[in-house]
Image 1 (cartoon, rainbow, N blue to C red):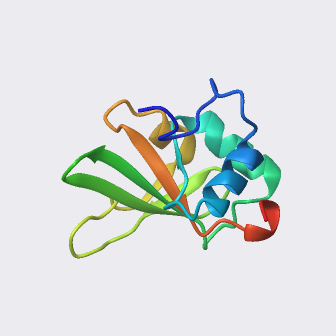
Image 2: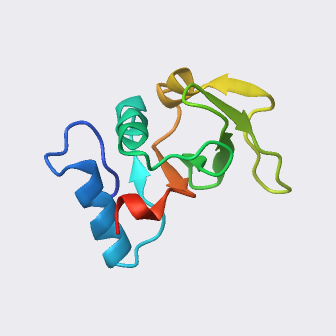
Length: 113
């Protein structure tokens, strides 16, 4: 699944990846691992209480979270797919091995436009 998501093995800088996804009018950018989240934080793209993360576990199951701080997310309750209830450590969440990749929305567009 090349180009499906960005992770720490990619040679393309994360900002270039975001720009390309934006210019291609692609769906929300996708990532693997906690390092990608750290890179997004460094760029200023993540805005607590606006940025959200969606973990793709399999074709019929995903979990939704809102970023509360640089270290915490909170599960979002939705009718069809919810995140795990309560607040969670973002590093532990993104190091889980039961999901394929995660998608992010609500990034600061000034960072990559």
